[in-house]
Image (tube, rainbow, N blue to C red):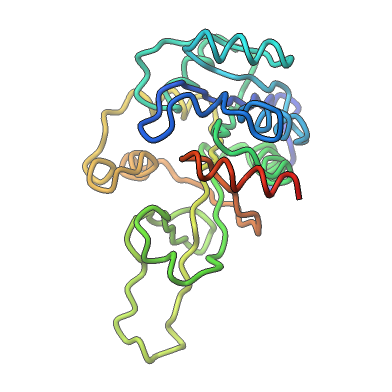
Length: 252
């Protein structure tokens, strides 16, 4: 492992948009007395190794609310097709940052220790251009759920492939020696600035379009993705029902 470089400066960016097919305005939905995105911001502030925590949005309502609870806000273009593109715009303005971590605005229970782990790995391994996280499945049935993204790894800890399907396929189901447990991919990413800029210049790739998984664009273009293993299992908010479940967890 390489030693940390003093020039490494990591910015954590929380992309937050108003539009959501299943839950419009969810970033400002109140959970335990605070807007959803405020929970994400507060947990992100607890992470170590982060120089800046920013909320990137194209919506005045989100910007106003974020400023009211004390966040630093960057207004970005409304035309970005993904959170990665929104972060790339921020990267173009924040000249002093060398790396960026993308924490989704609908993850109110994101673990600060996981963020710290990604930041430390980036600082100690300057050759890593992109990083994410995965955790073992706790329910075997989830491995067949296309909404739960699976990842398999190379021996060096980099991602070999991501899929919505169960991977790998165990052809000889009775042979326990060859069984490999799939890992659940968590939607947190880190990027070296030059890799982030390169990634958003590529057009959507065939596998990305097939699986509807943006990270496959990086693999198809030869960009390795380091995977940090964690026991953390995030609880995202995609529907009003998810918000109720998260509120109960936070209050308990």
